[in-house]
Image: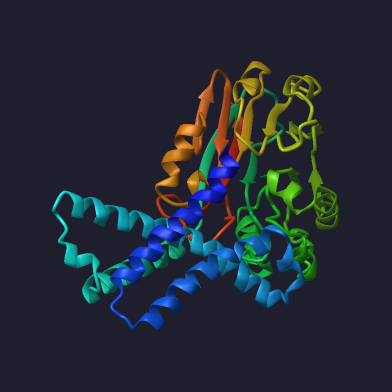
Length: 362
């Protein structure tokens, strides 16, 4: 049902926006055909990404195709919202009919309004938020620890090596003891990561990196993703736990894998005399970590919707779609993500990375 709606609703939205553009824009017929045709073509490029045709294009063209097609989804969403508001205003006689028919002023206001929204959304995306967490424990710590936590880098056609280079510099400035990444390092295709040799950027990180899989690692091809992790020097924890110093780090396989181990089985293998941290990409069934006596869980996946008003939807789907949560003695953090899966816009939410300071509780 959800997949059917996902396929149908964008085409309904295209028809709705196309009809409004046709009746609103005061240009000759040929120019209106070109504008609407470009919008439809931009949207249809998405299917090149889904069926991996993009991987056969030159890298620069594949990037352009990815950015244009995914950005068109967000632009379509906001045009639908704008025209719905205008139509409702017309029905209650607050908006004159003439505003929606061959009107140069309405066309200019909507065009520049949408441009301004997405320009600000791009600026918002580029400025990463640094989130500070203070963690404490009664368990033994030889020294306080600094841990940089990330999720959802979505490296690929729209987040290239140059972007990753900037992020690695940000991580190294924090001088972390460990770096944890809760899935979706890879976006939809492994090709741009291998062609740009992004693995060498991860090897610049001045701390051990531990990561779990996300759903996008499965979309890109899980075996290839595992090989990339290995080449990048990333310790992949896939339904396994590893004791390192005073920490026990547990990495759950993504729930995309129907055969992943049950949570209680994995948590039972952990050394609970150590401070236990779980990386589970999708923040479902949070009570499992609480029941198992886990100290901290890091998740991502939601992006908190990336743009308003989708953030309203994620806030209702998940117990915690973003930020901190305390259940019993277990603390949780759901990250909105360092990167993004579609167009480079953040509206109503922000990309972020977490710097956690773990110390002994007196």
